[in-house]
Image (cartoon, rainbow, N blue to C red; front, side):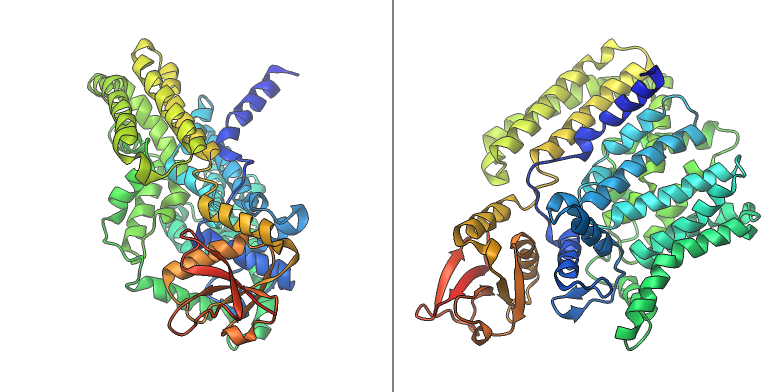
Length: 516
């Protein structure tokens, strides 16, 4: 085995603890639970066209992520690990594209560092382990950015084809959110307008939109108007005040928080390029700034909307870290902060955890051991950072800390087994009652409360075999099971029904069985 191949293998293996978790998994309710449940119904009903909630059509989004989850589960098995496979693959590709973007925009040297920076940012790590379309969308946007950057020097038609294709594929994931990266790239496309008159670009556009066009063709016979109008209705809803409406300055604090611990270095990288670069790189400076500005104008603001520029921010963080060590004043502040103040804060936080907040956080033994170990080792690594003089050694020592903490968060189950208590109790009930051979219905007529619906989504994903959504108890047949919320409208009479499970982790839901 030659040295180059060995080096590539080592670079790949180093990301495994951040990407792969083979223990038991569970979901959060929105959005991954919602999509995973829709995928479950696709398989159960053999319906690959219309997204549903029980027997009702849900037409405010495309079927891209649900289709991918269902198809993966059809091929590899209906497990939570497989449901997350599309996001995992997209996360791997995004790391690789970040590596290639570094080589294209900064240089071939140290490209692995930008990929590691991306892999150790909280927002990327979080969504790499969510079964949603957000990581796939971010990966496609990064692919488009990389292909456009390659077109600057390489006139290969393949990159024109890729740059055209990602637009339609990304639209199939997040519909009109594709406008944000396109508008951010628009000034560059106007300047390089010869790109958009090439035949291969338009061929790519057609190829990219083909999955959406095929889906539209098959779904439209079920609808009273074209699917595109339903998608526009969703955009109109998000454009006005709603649950996710936030002030215009939202991303000025949200991106730095979610991009920890690299936020300050990304900012330094942006400022440094403005001041010291003769020809500012559009992709590294103007593109992310325009992206954030346009996002800020939109009424609906969520953390994952900024995920598509995470790769670019990682490249800026690398440049910012390099600039920090070049400027004496910044270097002194950085070394003092990392070798003295941060380790003290870590040890103090661990002390406070055991003294005051251990009971309220409710970590299990595995989670506690992983996290405390990760933070302890990280603190000791930071203390030794002043021993190193070279840029690479200092960066690598600093990188070890978020790498260890991120890996421990993944391997402890904190980012993968997100509804652990609920999963454990439903699995216990399923084994005790033999539910793997029986269907379980739902009586949801009185469960129109967000908390109840959120809990129901997670319960249904763990329930082996789903039955029907009944409106009242009378529809339940003898020996049949159902999840139900007891209320003034619905009373569970002991002479007719047996309460199989009632627990604080299931609340307000109870599992009942109708007696013979």
